[in-house]
Amino acid sequence: MQFSSYQDLRTALIARAITCEAVVSGYLERIDRHRDDNIYIAVFHEKAIQRARELDGKLRDGGAPGRLFGMPMAIKDNISMKGAGLTCASRILENYESIYDATAIQRLEAEDAVFLGKTNMDEFAMGSSNENSAFGPVPNPFDKTRVPGGSSGGSAAAVAAGLALAALGSDTGGSVRQPAGFCDIVGLKPTYGRISRYGLVAFASSFDQIGVLARNCDDAALVLGVMAGKDSHDATSSSHAVSDYAAVMAGVQVEGLKIGVPKEYFHESLNPEVAGIVRTKLDELRERGAELVDITLPASDYAIAAYYILVTAEASSNLARFDGARYGYRSSDSADVLAMYVNSRTEGFGKEVKRRIMLGTYVLSAGYYDTYYRKAQQVRRVFQDRYREALEKVDVIAGPTSPFPPFGIGEKMADPLEMYLADVFTVPASIVGMPAVSVSVGLDSRNLPVGMHLICDFFEEGKLMGIARHMQRRQCSSAVVS
Ligand code: GLN
Image (tube, rainbow, N blue to C red; front, top):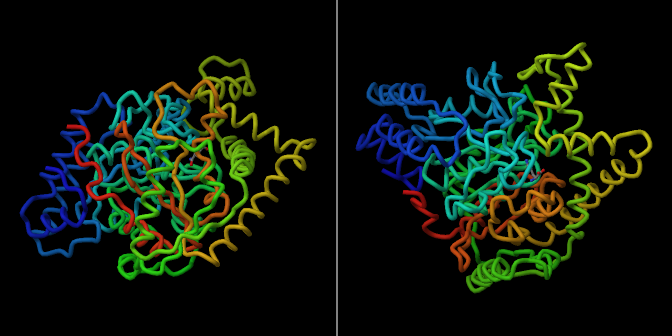
């Protein structure tokens, strides 16, 4: 029993045509059948069933169903859930258990969502393919020899393969949007500060945002609306009023919409099939009354360079807390405390995490701070100015989510720079902090998903999702995996 939208599931639940328990056990059974796909790091078999029974009881007793009543969700394993593991797909946190709930989790729970388990990811959310995981890679549900994208690869694959109706991911430079694009689903990264980061393990704090992966734009906006808003536990969370996203989305018309198409996004290195599918969709909107406006934006190359300087700098500082003493893994035989730090980190962290700690430490060091870190901050400011200017003239900036379709497992592991290029279109919105979404717009000749990436101005998530809904491919992959 598969539902492709929450609205359909909700209608069935509220009409008591089906019980929450039946829905949840259906998902759990499916998860178990697909255990080899390595999508979940932990599955909450008993807890999820118990919760479903409670919700069924609540409905029977005449209680008012919450906004996410019975929605079966998966959570990326870098978001805290009290009593559950929180591995960040790292050896260093292998046996760590969360001692509190993230604010996002609390808010979902208060609206009656059901959590199925924690999903696989790139270690500490560093990567674009889910291959940097201590638990091993996750195959793309469309082609098991390929990656699902990353770093929220497990969450994206779970939603695409029908192993959750929606999922949380985290997005620092594209980790929700890029895997959504690779898995034929919707991936939304809200404005920086829209959702509290309390309980999200920090990678690069001035970029990190929790995001939503869902089968369609309505579901993604619904989940966002529940989590959004000020939180006293996160000083960077915004007190900007939370809109009624469904209402804003309903008012978005294609007629008269100004869609900015940056010429830099359609560089000759862009995969021709990806370019063709994205162009066709944009042309279709033009035929329906939208105006396509050619715009120019700073070259994407600078975005990647600035991004990898800034996030590695922040990561090197954030990850200093994993020292073998305070959390998780501790190396067993060290002569003194310094050796214990070194050995625990050497044995606990994977290769990519170490690379980033070294890079970050380097760009922050006295002799190089001005050359790299300060310069990258200046580039960040230029991007902010340019994107703001562009969005004064157009409603939305549109382009592909990724320069190429899902690539083969192992294909880009030997060359980190090649891997970093997977984020070339998603990184700018993270640098400026604007909301952005990837929506599925087609399949290429090998049946691999292609995503459209859209960026709107700060806090315009309702408009963004309204526009995305007009582009969304009908019939987002039902049961790719049987
Ligand atoms: N792939 C990018 C990186 O490796 C983005 C990661 C993310 O958004 N968490 O940094």
